[in-house]
View 1 (cartoon, rainbow, N blue to C red):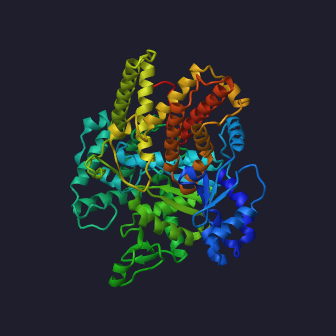
View 2: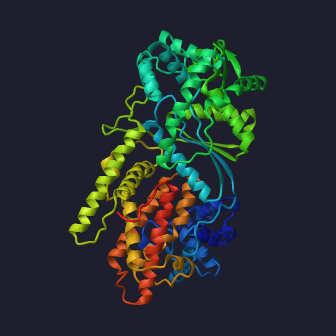
View 3: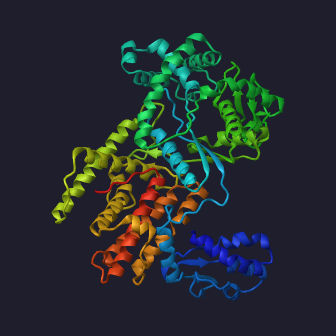
Length: 606
């Protein structure tokens, strides 16, 4: 029950009848949007200006013609034309009341399955398993998991694939470090931590102006690490045996963190899985004329398909990408191409989404462009870029130099903040005369975990994913503003009202009472609840989870105003009490469902 879709369907025949160019009707329909000012209406149709230009007529006259051409309906009150041709639209209260009763009986709260179901492969998380998960892995994991949940909620088939870094150049660094700098006792006690130490130790010794692991080098140390990688890729028995020794502990280290984040990934096919396919990828691309030899290496053109030959051209054009180095080793470009081939042939997806940071934009432009030339032109490739997480000094965390906090440490700090917020809430409520039950230690620990982990996730997802943001636990766990803690508190508040009101939630979900919308605050909350499908569909269309957090924030504010102005448990009549309790119940369900789409849990009491 997407209200915006219904309005556009209502306008479509009127626009089609007036538009001289029917191909532009979808653009005209896109000009029907929620009203910026609720005083003017619920929605606004701003299509008369563009249509007036096409027809050579004044927009206000075109707007009046559109209103006159609308078919009879039970949706709208009489539209009004304002200003230079805006059409203000207000939904009938009878329609709103009926629509609320309908979503009350719908487990998905009015969200309909996508008109056309697709198959998506989402590449998310992708940690380097040679070291503990750190803050740099958080955004890909959280954003990717939210997209998996949102798209599945709309009925799409979604395969989440964790493309583990378990075979690349970083293992050459580990192999060199293990052979030359290891501490046997430390490795026996905690293999992952010792490997992490070795990685940082060697990386810090690289020349500062020659820090790219995969590129050409005049740094003897980096060259030695690259040679260890080449030996691993060539099947050197010693290096393969060491790799097999490293892997079990590395993989086990990931499991508890993903469980704590409530992230369930379908597949974890690392770089090593694709290693046997890499020679064939290069040969195929050579045979098709996509790859070519350059200075002893095999490369593919840049995203434009341009092969810069002269030094002048190289300065003007994006560089080609190496798929096989001069020493015979393959690169992550080769692995990504093999991954595309495997995913396309195994899962036959309509789209592959890569949730990877913005610095990899050029890499993916090149890979996608050449993959389409290779034979995958019908597949949608999308780089779901995201910005950086910054520390309180607004600087990027250094992941290669060992300066990035580990995820376990970060989550522990967040949970400590969550416990503090819970204890502050309990103290405040008791001081104001509220009865607060004494919960057991296990229940308090569960609440603290839910608040802390939820705060970290929500803070990431509530910004546009392409922006940088500051990691600040005090702000993240605040009980005011657009935070997970505030949303979880709003949910717990609704649950308390429903408990006190003795609501039979099963009955509300099967035979909801009549809705009465006599107060403006009731109507505003009703409109907000009915816009849930719009938020979910918009988030899926733009791969933008922050549109759901924006919706949650507006919903929580509308609920707070409603509850402040409209008595619920002390309503004037039993019918009005039942109506308002149903609104509270719907707020509860919508908040819980929206948070679940973001991978965030709720608690019944806070």
